[in-house]
Amino acid sequence: MANKESILETLAAALPLDLELHFYHISTPPAPTTALFSPPPGQSEERTFCENHFIAASLPANNVLRRELLIFAIEVLVFTSHDLTTIFVSKADSTGYLHLLNSQPGGPSIIKTICTTVLSFFVQQSLHGPRILLSLFARSQNQYLFPGSIENSGKHVLEDRQLIKWWCQTLDPVLREHAPTTLAPSPVPGSDTSSEAYIVVPGCDRFETRGFLPSSTKSDSVSRWTNSYPRDLIVPDGSAPPRCLIPRFPDDPKARFLDDLDSEISAADLSTTGSWRSVGTLDHFWEMMSYRQECSAGRLVGFIWIVFTPRRHGEISHDPPVNCPQESAEHSGQAVEQLPTPNQSQVNSLDPILPPPSLKDDSLDPINAASPPPSSPVLALANEIHNVPMDMQDGTNKQNNLANEATQSGPANQKIVDSLFYDDAKTIPARWPLATRGDIVLSEQTYQELMNHLLQTDFANQDVATQSTASWIKKASDVVGISSWGQRLTGRKPVVPIVRSNRSESNTTVNVLMGVRKKRKAADSGDATNVVANAGTTEAGSTPEAATLPADSTRKKYKVAY
Image (cartoon, rainbow, N blue to C red; front, side):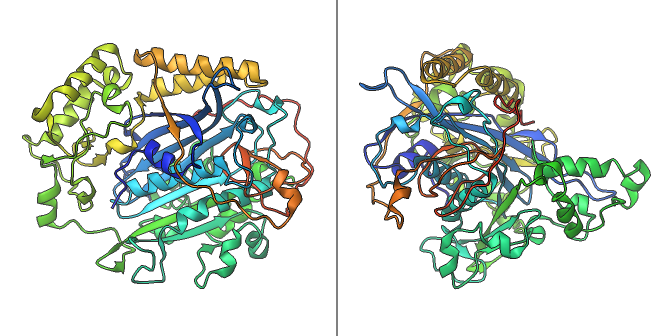
Protein backbone atom coordinates (compact mmCIF):
# COMPACT_ATOMS: atom_id res chain seq x y z
CA MET A 1 0.00 0.00 0.00
CA ALA A 2 1.34 3.39 -0.92
CA ASN A 3 2.40 5.71 1.82
CA LYS A 4 -0.37 8.16 2.75
CA GLU A 5 2.01 10.68 4.32
CA SER A 6 3.19 13.69 2.39
CA ILE A 7 6.76 13.79 1.18
CA LEU A 8 7.65 16.42 3.80
CA GLU A 9 6.22 14.33 6.61
CA THR A 10 8.25 11.37 5.36
CA LEU A 11 11.41 13.48 5.30
CA ALA A 12 10.84 14.61 8.88
CA ALA A 13 10.63 10.98 9.98
CA ALA A 14 13.91 10.12 8.21
CA LEU A 15 16.08 13.10 9.22
CA PRO A 16 18.26 12.97 12.37
CA LEU A 17 16.61 13.85 15.65
CA ASP A 18 16.20 17.61 16.29
CA LEU A 19 17.78 18.59 12.95
CA GLU A 20 15.95 21.63 11.59
CA LEU A 21 15.73 22.29 7.85
CA HIS A 22 13.35 24.26 5.65
CA PHE A 23 11.96 22.39 2.63
CA TYR A 24 10.37 23.73 -0.55
CA HIS A 25 8.49 21.47 -2.98
CA ILE A 26 7.30 22.68 -6.39
CA SER A 27 5.55 20.41 -8.88
CA THR A 28 3.54 20.43 -12.09
CA PRO A 29 0.39 18.43 -12.91
CA PRO A 30 0.82 15.39 -15.18
CA ALA A 31 0.82 16.67 -18.75
CA PRO A 32 1.05 14.83 -22.10
CA THR A 33 4.64 14.51 -23.28
CA THR A 34 6.76 12.69 -25.84
CA ALA A 35 6.98 8.96 -25.17
CA LEU A 36 10.22 7.72 -23.62
CA PHE A 37 10.48 4.85 -26.10
CA SER A 38 10.32 5.26 -29.86
CA PRO A 39 7.41 3.24 -31.31
CA PRO A 40 8.13 0.18 -33.47
CA PRO A 41 7.55 0.60 -37.22
CA GLY A 42 3.87 0.93 -38.06
CA GLN A 43 2.80 1.64 -34.49
CA SER A 44 1.76 4.88 -32.84
CA GLU A 45 3.61 6.51 -29.97
CA GLU A 46 2.56 5.39 -26.51
CA ARG A 47 0.57 8.01 -24.60
CA THR A 48 2.77 9.33 -21.82
CA PHE A 49 2.34 11.92 -19.08
CA CYS A 50 5.10 13.77 -17.23
CA GLU A 51 5.10 15.71 -13.99
CA ASN A 52 8.06 17.72 -12.63
CA HIS A 53 9.11 17.84 -8.99
CA PHE A 54 11.68 20.21 -7.51
CA ILE A 55 12.55 19.78 -3.83
CA ALA A 56 14.99 22.17 -2.16
CA ALA A 57 16.37 22.20 1.39
CA SER A 58 17.74 25.21 3.22
CA LEU A 59 19.29 26.09 6.55
CA PRO A 60 16.79 28.28 8.43
CA ALA A 61 17.87 31.57 9.94
CA ASN A 62 19.04 31.20 13.55
CA ASN A 63 21.45 32.68 16.06
CA VAL A 64 24.43 31.63 13.95
CA LEU A 65 22.99 32.08 10.45
CA ARG A 66 21.25 35.44 10.10
CA ARG A 67 19.52 34.63 6.80
CA GLU A 68 18.13 31.47 5.24
CA LEU A 69 20.52 29.60 2.94
CA LEU A 70 19.80 26.90 0.34
CA ILE A 71 22.02 23.85 0.73
CA PHE A 72 20.62 21.19 -1.61
CA ALA A 73 18.03 20.54 -4.30
CA ILE A 74 16.88 17.60 -6.38
CA GLU A 75 14.69 17.50 -9.49
CA VAL A 76 12.66 14.37 -10.23
CA LEU A 77 10.56 13.72 -13.34
CA VAL A 78 7.75 11.16 -13.17
CA PHE A 79 6.67 9.66 -16.52
CA THR A 80 3.46 7.64 -16.60
CA SER A 81 2.27 5.36 -19.39
CA HIS A 82 -0.15 2.44 -19.45
CA ASP A 83 2.41 -0.24 -18.57
CA LEU A 84 5.24 1.64 -16.85
CA THR A 85 5.81 4.43 -14.36
CA THR A 86 9.30 5.89 -14.71
CA ILE A 87 10.88 7.95 -11.92
CA PHE A 88 13.86 9.78 -13.38
CA VAL A 89 16.41 11.73 -11.31
CA SER A 90 17.02 14.68 -13.58
CA LYS A 91 19.39 16.78 -11.44
CA ALA A 92 20.67 17.12 -7.92
CA ASP A 93 23.07 19.73 -6.62
CA SER A 94 24.43 21.20 -3.41
CA THR A 95 25.74 24.66 -2.62
CA GLY A 96 28.60 23.58 -0.35
CA TYR A 97 27.27 25.26 2.80
CA LEU A 98 26.12 22.18 4.66
CA HIS A 99 29.19 22.49 6.89
CA LEU A 100 27.44 25.45 8.58
CA LEU A 101 25.05 22.91 10.06
CA ASN A 102 26.43 21.58 13.33
CA SER A 103 25.37 18.00 12.74
CA GLN A 104 26.32 15.21 15.10
CA PRO A 105 29.74 13.69 14.25
CA GLY A 106 29.49 10.19 12.89
CA GLY A 107 25.87 10.66 11.91
CA PRO A 108 24.36 9.75 8.53
CA SER A 109 24.86 11.92 5.48
CA ILE A 110 22.06 14.49 5.32
CA ILE A 111 22.13 14.69 1.54
CA LYS A 112 22.11 10.94 1.10
CA THR A 113 19.20 10.68 3.54
CA ILE A 114 17.21 13.27 1.59
CA CYS A 115 17.86 11.57 -1.77
CA THR A 116 17.02 8.09 -0.51
CA THR A 117 13.86 9.26 1.27
CA VAL A 118 12.56 11.31 -1.66
CA LEU A 119 13.07 8.52 -4.20
CA SER A 120 11.65 5.86 -1.89
CA PHE A 121 8.57 8.03 -1.41
CA PHE A 122 7.94 8.38 -5.14
CA VAL A 123 8.37 4.63 -5.60
CA GLN A 124 5.87 3.92 -2.81
CA GLN A 125 3.35 6.30 -4.33
CA SER A 126 3.68 4.56 -7.72
CA LEU A 127 3.14 0.96 -6.61
CA HIS A 128 -0.43 0.99 -7.94
CA GLY A 129 0.94 0.45 -11.46
CA PRO A 130 2.07 -2.76 -13.16
CA ARG A 131 5.78 -1.87 -13.00
CA ILE A 132 7.95 1.01 -11.76
CA LEU A 133 11.34 2.04 -13.12
CA LEU A 134 13.69 4.21 -11.05
CA SER A 135 16.36 5.55 -13.39
CA LEU A 136 19.29 7.97 -13.44
CA PHE A 137 22.69 8.44 -15.01
CA ALA A 138 25.70 9.42 -12.93
CA ARG A 139 27.74 12.07 -14.68
CA SER A 140 30.17 14.20 -12.70
CA GLN A 141 29.67 17.93 -13.12
CA ASN A 142 30.89 20.92 -11.15
CA GLN A 143 27.42 22.46 -10.77
CA TYR A 144 23.91 21.78 -12.03
CA LEU A 145 21.41 23.92 -10.13
CA PHE A 146 23.39 26.51 -8.17
CA PRO A 147 25.47 28.87 -10.36
CA GLY A 148 28.80 29.91 -8.90
CA SER A 149 28.67 27.28 -6.16
CA ILE A 150 31.84 25.66 -7.49
CA GLU A 151 33.70 28.80 -6.37
CA ASN A 152 32.73 28.02 -2.79
CA SER A 153 35.68 26.24 -1.17
CA GLY A 154 33.27 24.18 0.93
CA LYS A 155 31.95 22.39 -2.12
CA HIS A 156 33.89 19.31 -3.21
CA VAL A 157 33.05 17.74 -6.55
CA LEU A 158 33.16 13.96 -6.77
CA GLU A 159 35.01 12.51 -9.70
CA ASP A 160 33.09 10.17 -11.96
CA ARG A 161 33.98 6.84 -10.32
CA GLN A 162 33.14 8.16 -6.87
CA LEU A 163 29.89 9.62 -8.14
CA ILE A 164 28.71 6.33 -9.63
CA LYS A 165 29.57 4.53 -6.42
CA TRP A 166 27.79 7.14 -4.29
CA TRP A 167 24.56 6.81 -6.24
CA CYS A 168 24.66 3.02 -6.01
CA GLN A 169 24.96 3.34 -2.24
CA THR A 170 22.17 5.93 -2.13
CA LEU A 171 19.75 3.83 -4.19
CA ASP A 172 20.55 0.52 -2.51
CA PRO A 173 18.27 1.16 0.53
CA VAL A 174 15.37 1.88 -1.85
CA LEU A 175 16.06 -1.41 -3.62
CA ARG A 176 16.17 -3.35 -0.33
CA GLU A 177 12.80 -2.11 0.86
CA HIS A 178 11.44 -4.84 -1.42
CA ALA A 179 12.24 -8.50 -1.89
CA PRO A 180 14.47 -10.00 -4.58
CA THR A 181 12.53 -11.17 -7.63
CA THR A 182 13.71 -14.76 -7.21
CA LEU A 183 12.19 -15.11 -3.72
CA ALA A 184 8.51 -15.78 -3.07
CA PRO A 185 6.76 -15.18 -0.80
CA SER A 186 8.41 -11.92 0.16
CA PRO A 187 10.86 -12.11 3.11
CA VAL A 188 10.47 -8.34 3.60
CA PRO A 189 7.65 -7.64 6.10
CA GLY A 190 4.78 -5.78 4.51
CA SER A 191 6.31 -5.89 1.05
CA ASP A 192 4.28 -7.18 -1.89
CA THR A 193 6.71 -5.91 -4.52
CA SER A 194 9.93 -7.36 -5.90
CA SER A 195 12.91 -5.28 -7.00
CA GLU A 196 16.00 -5.68 -9.16
CA ALA A 197 18.89 -3.27 -9.79
CA TYR A 198 20.86 -2.95 -13.02
CA ILE A 199 23.92 -0.90 -13.93
CA VAL A 200 25.88 -0.25 -17.12
CA VAL A 201 29.09 1.78 -17.19
CA PRO A 202 30.19 2.04 -20.84
CA GLY A 203 33.86 1.16 -21.16
CA CYS A 204 33.94 -0.99 -18.01
CA ASP A 205 33.73 -4.77 -18.04
CA ARG A 206 31.79 -6.81 -15.48
CA PHE A 207 34.72 -7.07 -13.09
CA GLU A 208 35.35 -3.31 -13.11
CA THR A 209 31.64 -2.58 -12.70
CA ARG A 210 31.47 -4.67 -9.54
CA GLY A 211 33.76 -2.11 -7.89
CA PHE A 212 30.94 0.46 -8.03
CA LEU A 213 28.41 -1.70 -6.19
CA PRO A 214 27.55 -1.20 -2.49
CA SER A 215 29.37 -3.29 0.08
CA SER A 216 26.02 -4.81 1.10
CA THR A 217 26.09 -6.90 -2.08
CA LYS A 218 28.94 -9.03 -0.67
CA SER A 219 26.62 -10.64 1.89
CA ASP A 220 23.69 -11.20 -0.48
CA SER A 221 22.60 -14.81 -0.92
CA VAL A 222 20.65 -13.64 -3.96
CA SER A 223 22.30 -11.08 -6.23
CA ARG A 224 20.43 -7.75 -6.16
CA TRP A 225 22.61 -5.91 -8.72
CA THR A 226 23.17 -7.00 -12.31
CA ASN A 227 25.62 -5.62 -14.85
CA SER A 228 23.20 -5.33 -17.77
CA TYR A 229 20.31 -3.35 -19.19
CA PRO A 230 16.80 -4.55 -18.07
CA ARG A 231 15.28 -4.65 -21.55
CA ASP A 232 12.84 -7.48 -20.95
CA LEU A 233 11.42 -5.86 -17.81
CA ILE A 234 10.67 -2.38 -19.14
CA VAL A 235 9.98 -2.85 -22.86
CA PRO A 236 6.71 -4.52 -23.94
CA ASP A 237 8.16 -5.88 -27.19
CA GLY A 238 11.79 -6.99 -26.86
CA SER A 239 11.90 -7.98 -30.54
CA ALA A 240 11.52 -4.37 -31.71
CA PRO A 241 14.51 -2.59 -33.30
CA PRO A 242 17.18 -1.40 -30.82
CA ARG A 243 16.11 2.24 -31.22
CA CYS A 244 12.75 1.29 -29.68
CA LEU A 245 14.23 -0.44 -26.65
CA ILE A 246 16.05 2.45 -24.93
CA PRO A 247 14.33 5.36 -23.15
CA ARG A 248 15.23 8.93 -24.04
CA PHE A 249 15.42 11.23 -21.04
CA PRO A 250 16.08 14.99 -20.98
CA ASP A 251 19.77 15.94 -21.08
CA ASP A 252 20.67 12.26 -21.45
CA PRO A 253 23.98 11.20 -23.11
CA LYS A 254 22.45 8.09 -24.61
CA ALA A 255 19.46 10.07 -25.89
CA ARG A 256 21.86 12.29 -27.86
CA PHE A 257 23.52 9.18 -29.27
CA LEU A 258 20.10 7.77 -30.20
CA ASP A 259 19.28 10.99 -32.05
CA ASP A 260 22.58 10.80 -33.96
CA LEU A 261 21.88 7.20 -34.96
CA ASP A 262 18.35 8.09 -36.04
CA SER A 263 19.82 10.50 -38.58
CA GLU A 264 21.07 7.41 -40.47
CA ILE A 265 17.53 6.17 -41.07
CA SER A 266 15.58 7.33 -44.08
CA ALA A 267 11.86 8.02 -43.85
CA ALA A 268 11.15 4.83 -45.79
CA ASP A 269 13.30 2.68 -43.49
CA LEU A 270 11.78 4.32 -40.42
CA SER A 271 8.32 3.12 -41.41
CA THR A 272 9.47 -0.38 -42.38
CA THR A 273 12.51 -1.80 -40.57
CA GLY A 274 13.32 1.06 -38.17
CA SER A 275 16.89 -0.22 -37.94
CA TRP A 276 20.13 1.74 -37.81
CA ARG A 277 22.87 1.12 -40.33
CA SER A 278 25.92 1.28 -38.06
CA VAL A 279 24.53 -0.28 -34.86
CA GLY A 280 22.57 -3.51 -35.08
CA THR A 281 22.12 -4.74 -31.50
CA LEU A 282 21.77 -3.40 -27.96
CA ASP A 283 25.17 -4.82 -27.00
CA HIS A 284 26.72 -2.97 -29.92
CA PHE A 285 24.93 0.21 -28.81
CA TRP A 286 26.39 0.09 -25.29
CA GLU A 287 29.81 -0.74 -26.71
CA MET A 288 29.67 2.32 -28.95
CA MET A 289 28.48 4.48 -26.04
CA SER A 290 31.93 4.10 -24.49
CA TYR A 291 33.37 6.06 -27.43
CA ARG A 292 30.98 8.98 -27.05
CA GLN A 293 32.39 12.25 -25.77
CA GLU A 294 30.53 11.98 -22.45
CA CYS A 295 31.97 8.52 -21.78
CA SER A 296 35.47 8.79 -23.26
CA ALA A 297 38.72 10.65 -22.59
CA GLY A 298 39.05 9.04 -19.18
CA ARG A 299 35.54 9.97 -18.07
CA LEU A 300 32.87 7.51 -17.01
CA VAL A 301 29.09 7.75 -16.95
CA GLY A 302 27.02 5.24 -15.00
CA PHE A 303 23.50 4.30 -16.10
CA ILE A 304 21.45 2.84 -13.26
CA TRP A 305 17.97 1.29 -13.30
CA ILE A 306 15.94 -0.25 -10.49
CA VAL A 307 12.81 -2.14 -11.54
CA PHE A 308 9.96 -2.67 -9.06
CA THR A 309 7.37 -5.30 -9.94
CA PRO A 310 4.20 -5.66 -7.81
CA ARG A 311 3.37 -9.23 -6.89
CA ARG A 312 -0.01 -10.66 -7.81
CA HIS A 313 -1.65 -13.04 -5.34
CA GLY A 314 1.66 -13.91 -3.72
CA GLU A 315 3.41 -14.51 -7.00
CA ILE A 316 5.69 -12.30 -9.06
CA SER A 317 4.06 -10.85 -12.13
CA HIS A 318 6.30 -9.86 -15.03
CA ASP A 319 3.27 -9.05 -17.17
CA PRO A 320 1.04 -5.99 -16.86
CA PRO A 321 -2.20 -6.84 -15.05
CA VAL A 322 -5.21 -7.53 -17.21
CA ASN A 323 -8.15 -5.29 -16.37
CA CYS A 324 -10.92 -7.24 -14.76
CA PRO A 325 -14.45 -6.10 -15.80
CA GLN A 326 -15.81 -6.39 -12.26
CA GLU A 327 -12.87 -4.50 -10.74
CA SER A 328 -12.76 -1.85 -13.45
CA ALA A 329 -16.43 -1.13 -12.92
CA GLU A 330 -15.75 -0.65 -9.26
CA HIS A 331 -12.73 1.62 -9.68
CA SER A 332 -13.33 3.47 -12.94
CA GLY A 333 -14.06 6.84 -11.44
CA GLN A 334 -16.73 6.36 -8.77
CA ALA A 335 -16.83 8.94 -6.03
CA VAL A 336 -15.82 7.59 -2.63
CA GLU A 337 -15.29 8.99 0.80
CA GLN A 338 -11.82 10.16 1.72
CA LEU A 339 -9.72 10.80 4.77
CA PRO A 340 -9.60 14.31 6.20
CA THR A 341 -6.88 16.42 4.67
CA PRO A 342 -3.65 16.35 6.70
CA ASN A 343 -2.89 19.76 8.10
CA GLN A 344 0.80 19.45 7.35
CA SER A 345 1.40 21.49 4.23
CA GLN A 346 0.08 24.36 2.17
CA VAL A 347 -1.24 22.18 -0.62
CA ASN A 348 -4.87 22.91 0.26
CA SER A 349 -4.46 26.66 -0.04
CA LEU A 350 -2.25 26.59 -3.12
CA ASP A 351 -3.86 23.85 -5.18
CA PRO A 352 -7.43 24.79 -6.08
CA ILE A 353 -7.98 21.99 -8.57
CA LEU A 354 -8.40 18.80 -6.73
CA PRO A 355 -9.59 17.89 -3.23
CA PRO A 356 -7.70 15.33 -1.11
CA PRO A 357 -7.34 11.79 -2.50
CA SER A 358 -9.94 9.17 -1.78
CA LEU A 359 -9.77 6.56 0.93
CA LYS A 360 -9.51 3.87 -1.76
CA ASP A 361 -6.80 5.70 -3.65
CA ASP A 362 -4.52 2.65 -3.43
CA SER A 363 -7.11 0.31 -4.94
CA LEU A 364 -6.86 1.91 -8.37
CA ASP A 365 -4.48 -0.75 -9.67
CA PRO A 366 -6.69 -2.46 -12.27
CA ILE A 367 -8.10 0.75 -13.71
CA ASN A 368 -10.04 0.65 -16.95
CA ALA A 369 -8.44 2.69 -19.71
CA ALA A 370 -11.74 3.06 -21.54
CA SER A 371 -13.48 6.40 -21.67
CA PRO A 372 -15.67 7.06 -18.59
CA PRO A 373 -19.40 7.74 -19.00
CA PRO A 374 -20.43 11.39 -19.57
CA SER A 375 -21.84 11.58 -16.07
CA SER A 376 -18.60 10.44 -14.47
CA PRO A 377 -17.18 12.89 -11.90
CA VAL A 378 -13.76 12.07 -13.30
CA LEU A 379 -14.72 13.61 -16.63
CA ALA A 380 -16.06 16.67 -14.85
CA LEU A 381 -12.73 16.96 -13.11
CA ALA A 382 -10.87 16.54 -16.39
CA ASN A 383 -12.91 19.30 -17.97
CA GLU A 384 -12.18 21.58 -15.03
CA ILE A 385 -8.47 20.94 -15.36
CA HIS A 386 -8.39 21.52 -19.12
CA ASN A 387 -10.56 24.63 -18.93
CA VAL A 388 -8.56 26.57 -16.34
CA PRO A 389 -5.02 25.20 -16.45
CA MET A 390 -3.09 28.44 -16.22
CA ASP A 391 -5.13 30.00 -13.43
CA MET A 392 -4.91 26.87 -11.35
CA GLN A 393 -1.37 25.93 -12.09
CA ASP A 394 0.10 29.35 -11.52
CA GLY A 395 -1.69 29.87 -8.23
CA THR A 396 -3.29 33.27 -8.82
CA ASN A 397 -5.05 35.05 -5.97
CA LYS A 398 -8.46 34.26 -7.44
CA GLN A 399 -7.79 30.54 -7.61
CA ASN A 400 -6.19 30.45 -4.17
CA ASN A 401 -9.31 32.07 -2.73
CA LEU A 402 -11.44 29.42 -4.41
CA ALA A 403 -9.21 26.74 -2.92
CA ASN A 404 -9.57 28.19 0.56
CA GLU A 405 -13.35 28.28 0.19
CA ALA A 406 -13.40 24.66 -0.97
CA THR A 407 -11.21 23.60 1.95
CA GLN A 408 -13.42 25.34 4.49
CA SER A 409 -16.80 24.38 3.05
CA GLY A 410 -17.19 21.35 5.30
CA PRO A 411 -18.97 18.00 4.75
CA ALA A 412 -20.28 18.96 1.31
CA ASN A 413 -16.78 18.43 -0.04
CA GLN A 414 -16.09 15.20 1.78
CA LYS A 415 -17.27 13.03 -1.12
CA ILE A 416 -14.82 13.51 -3.97
CA VAL A 417 -13.53 11.68 -6.99
CA ASP A 418 -10.37 9.67 -7.17
CA SER A 419 -7.30 11.71 -7.97
CA LEU A 420 -7.39 10.91 -11.67
CA PHE A 421 -8.00 12.79 -14.88
CA TYR A 422 -8.02 11.78 -18.53
CA ASP A 423 -6.07 12.90 -21.53
CA ASP A 424 -7.66 14.91 -24.33
CA ALA A 425 -8.90 11.75 -26.03
CA LYS A 426 -10.54 10.63 -22.75
CA THR A 427 -8.89 7.24 -23.09
CA ILE A 428 -5.89 7.10 -20.75
CA PRO A 429 -6.20 7.85 -17.04
CA ALA A 430 -3.41 9.72 -15.28
CA ARG A 431 -3.11 9.30 -11.53
CA TRP A 432 -2.25 12.40 -9.51
CA PRO A 433 -2.32 11.69 -5.76
CA LEU A 434 -2.39 14.68 -3.45
CA ALA A 435 0.50 13.33 -1.36
CA THR A 436 2.96 13.82 -4.23
CA ARG A 437 1.99 17.37 -5.12
CA GLY A 438 4.17 20.29 -4.18
CA ASP A 439 3.50 23.16 -1.83
CA ILE A 440 3.10 25.09 -5.07
CA VAL A 441 1.65 23.57 -8.27
CA LEU A 442 2.70 25.38 -11.44
CA SER A 443 2.27 25.01 -15.15
CA GLU A 444 5.23 23.61 -17.06
CA GLN A 445 6.05 27.04 -18.48
CA THR A 446 5.96 28.83 -15.12
CA TYR A 447 7.91 26.00 -13.52
CA GLN A 448 10.71 26.44 -16.04
CA GLU A 449 10.65 30.20 -15.57
CA LEU A 450 11.20 29.74 -11.85
CA MET A 451 14.03 27.30 -12.52
CA ASN A 452 15.60 29.75 -14.95
CA HIS A 453 15.42 32.42 -12.25
CA LEU A 454 17.43 30.13 -9.98
CA LEU A 455 20.04 29.82 -12.73
CA GLN A 456 20.46 33.57 -12.81
CA THR A 457 21.49 33.69 -9.15
CA ASP A 458 24.94 33.32 -7.56
CA PHE A 459 26.12 31.03 -4.75
CA ALA A 460 29.84 31.78 -4.90
CA ASN A 461 30.05 32.96 -1.27
CA GLN A 462 27.78 32.98 1.76
CA ASP A 463 26.62 36.59 1.44
CA VAL A 464 25.50 36.37 -2.18
CA ALA A 465 24.13 32.85 -1.56
CA THR A 466 21.75 34.14 1.14
CA GLN A 467 20.65 36.94 -1.18
CA SER A 468 20.09 34.44 -3.98
CA THR A 469 18.11 32.20 -1.64
CA ALA A 470 15.83 35.05 -0.65
CA SER A 471 15.43 36.12 -4.29
CA TRP A 472 14.36 32.67 -5.46
CA ILE A 473 11.90 32.15 -2.58
CA LYS A 474 10.37 35.60 -3.18
CA LYS A 475 10.07 34.91 -6.90
CA ALA A 476 8.03 31.80 -6.18
CA SER A 477 5.91 33.70 -3.65
CA ASP A 478 5.15 36.40 -6.21
CA VAL A 479 4.17 33.78 -8.81
CA VAL A 480 1.46 32.29 -6.58
CA GLY A 481 0.53 35.51 -4.78
CA ILE A 482 1.39 34.52 -1.23
CA SER A 483 3.72 35.98 1.37
CA SER A 484 5.49 32.79 2.42
CA TRP A 485 5.59 29.11 1.59
CA GLY A 486 7.54 25.94 2.29
CA GLN A 487 7.71 24.10 5.58
CA ARG A 488 10.20 23.98 8.43
CA LEU A 489 10.87 20.40 9.49
CA THR A 490 12.44 18.96 12.62
CA GLY A 491 14.03 15.52 12.29
CA ARG A 492 12.60 12.73 14.43
CA LYS A 493 14.92 9.79 13.81
CA PRO A 494 17.38 8.95 16.62
CA VAL A 495 20.97 9.08 15.41
CA VAL A 496 23.09 5.96 15.58
CA PRO A 497 26.75 6.97 15.02
CA ILE A 498 28.43 5.27 12.08
CA VAL A 499 31.51 3.25 13.05
CA ARG A 500 34.36 4.01 10.71
CA SER A 501 37.31 1.75 10.08
CA ASN A 502 39.65 4.61 9.21
CA ARG A 503 39.73 7.39 11.77
CA SER A 504 41.03 9.98 9.32
CA GLU A 505 38.02 9.50 7.08
CA SER A 506 35.58 10.72 9.72
CA ASN A 507 36.80 14.28 9.26
CA THR A 508 36.33 14.30 5.50
CA THR A 509 33.15 15.58 3.90
CA VAL A 510 32.05 14.96 0.36
CA ASN A 511 29.91 16.89 -2.07
CA VAL A 512 28.08 14.93 -4.73
CA LEU A 513 28.15 16.29 -8.26
CA MET A 514 27.48 14.91 -11.63
CA GLY A 515 29.73 15.94 -14.44
CA VAL A 516 33.39 16.90 -14.09
CA ARG A 517 36.05 15.31 -11.95
CA LYS A 518 38.10 17.24 -9.46
CA LYS A 519 41.19 15.87 -7.72
CA ARG A 520 40.67 15.27 -4.02
CA LYS A 521 42.69 13.90 -1.15
CA ALA A 522 40.16 11.56 0.36
CA ALA A 523 36.45 10.87 0.33
CA ASP A 524 33.97 9.11 2.54
CA SER A 525 30.87 7.46 1.17
CA GLY A 526 28.99 7.74 4.41
CA ASP A 527 29.09 11.53 4.75
CA ALA A 528 28.38 13.21 1.44
CA THR A 529 28.09 16.86 2.35
CA ASN A 530 27.16 18.37 -0.99
CA VAL A 531 25.63 16.77 -4.03
CA VAL A 532 25.25 17.69 -7.65
CA ALA A 533 23.21 15.28 -9.58
CA ASN A 534 22.53 13.27 -12.47
CA ALA A 535 23.91 10.58 -10.11
CA GLY A 536 26.63 9.32 -7.59
CA THR A 537 29.33 9.72 -4.84
CA THR A 538 32.29 8.01 -3.09
CA GLU A 539 33.35 5.19 -0.89
CA ALA A 540 36.08 4.87 1.71
CA GLY A 541 39.41 3.94 0.25
CA SER A 542 38.66 5.02 -3.31
CA THR A 543 41.31 7.11 -5.01
CA PRO A 544 40.11 9.99 -7.16
CA GLU A 545 41.65 10.44 -10.54
CA ALA A 546 43.16 13.79 -11.41
CA ALA A 547 41.20 15.95 -13.80
CA THR A 548 41.53 19.46 -15.09
CA LEU A 549 38.40 21.57 -15.28
CA PRO A 550 37.86 23.43 -18.54
CA ALA A 551 38.11 27.18 -18.33
CA ASP A 552 34.46 27.62 -19.18
CA SER A 553 33.13 24.95 -16.83
CA THR A 554 32.93 27.03 -13.65
CA ARG A 555 29.53 28.45 -14.57
CA LYS A 556 27.72 25.53 -16.13
CA LYS A 557 24.38 26.54 -17.58
CA TYR A 558 21.33 24.66 -16.31
CA LYS A 559 19.87 22.22 -18.73
CA VAL A 560 16.14 22.66 -19.05
CA ALA A 561 14.14 19.46 -18.96
CA TYR A 562 11.44 19.33 -21.63
